[in-house]
Image (cartoon, rainbow over all chains, first blue to last red; front, side, top):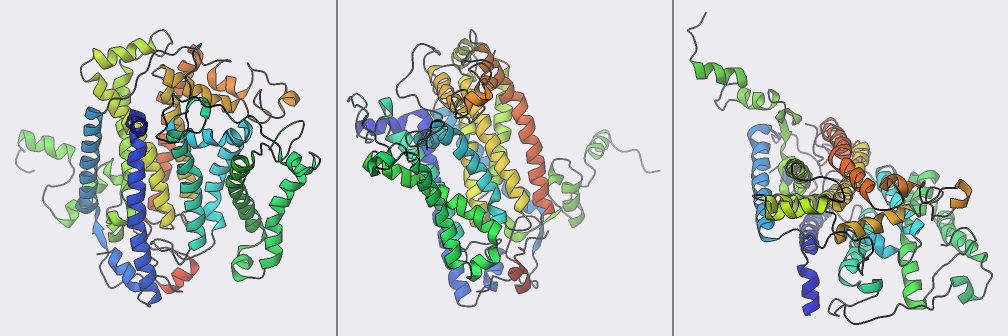
Length: 55
Length: 244
Length: 266
């Protein structure tokens, strides 16, 4: 465990950790919207997507 | 399946000034604040002066190339360092010309383009980011496998007894080329089997061939990794001039 | 004709060719009469403003490029690219020069941030399908910019001339030695007769080893050559965003959707 934290603390490795958080967060943002849009399309409410994007 | 429609009755255009410019200003301030805070708190590394006689162990490439360095375990340098990166770049550039699906253009969706998204995430997260993480956290001296919690002071010896696939199967070395050809011919088999489906029919032979080649190459990477890790297979195809 | 304008009035009017009040005309002129801002069109479509859609990654990547350029120029005042002086200059920068460490940090973390942001930008463009017609070419330009970003980062990595730099670049350039036909350790090297001194790795390093020639070469690549090329491609990239119809968006009609034409015509 101590060694894992040592690797993590190396200055050049911190951006990688930051990237992981950003990647997971952004994929979550994408997935939420994608699933919502898919639901709207399946319900025939596709036009609402465009309207939402222009709010 | 339909695509979302743009409702023209709603007013849509806004002036760049101030709407876009304001967002840009706020984003700039936020990003610069973060960067400044980070630059105050964390110092860039500076190790001892470069010494041509002392090679650090492990000797790691910059982190954004660690994915390729990890591939060096499974492929020879000309493949891992030259051919595969070139294919990545060319393959990425080819995507818009191979993806003929008109849906999903300008909005997020999953069900309208599952193949494209699946392949891209497999490539980006599975074949690019994951090897980088392995290279950062799981590779220690001698490029041996160290679990992230294992200190690098523990001595490990690399597994020296690797075997070629053709030897493992007990067939002549030249047949390795047949194996590689057979792998890529799976693309042809799939074409013969499915060429009448609407997806492949509208794609056409040329685009399909390129897509199949790139996909099979992408899939070959984890396959070769598994062969190496599980069966200690070093090469699939050995020739006097190059090894795959 | 009119009364003589005040001194500062004349100065202001000569610089800014629009009035200050918030009128539609002035909003347009703010953009079109400014050489930097008129990269943007005078009006944009609303969906392009949504951060939940664009994530702001493209703009942030460009911001990081500007940060690295500015901090890089500052660093250039204090750095001499020879094996004898590079490391000493780094120590000097970090310990003697006021804010030297801070400048170096801004540069290095800005560079790392740029690489990550460019990757995330590519991810966003892919997930929103914004590479589909008519934006295929701009995606290709983006891939070139991705490669240039990585090369800029790679060439800069050598400049501190410490153990981390030297050996990371050794690992990287050793892969070049394995290029088929062009590298002295690659397949086909016997056919073309390339040697340790004449192959593509020697071209990169200016010789068979990572030494003074490599440092100078990487310095010029990093500070002049690659930024010029990257700027050129960025100009094309930003121009094409406008010409291809602005930030991509949902199609206008069902027939557009079936034909694969996206919205976002600004």
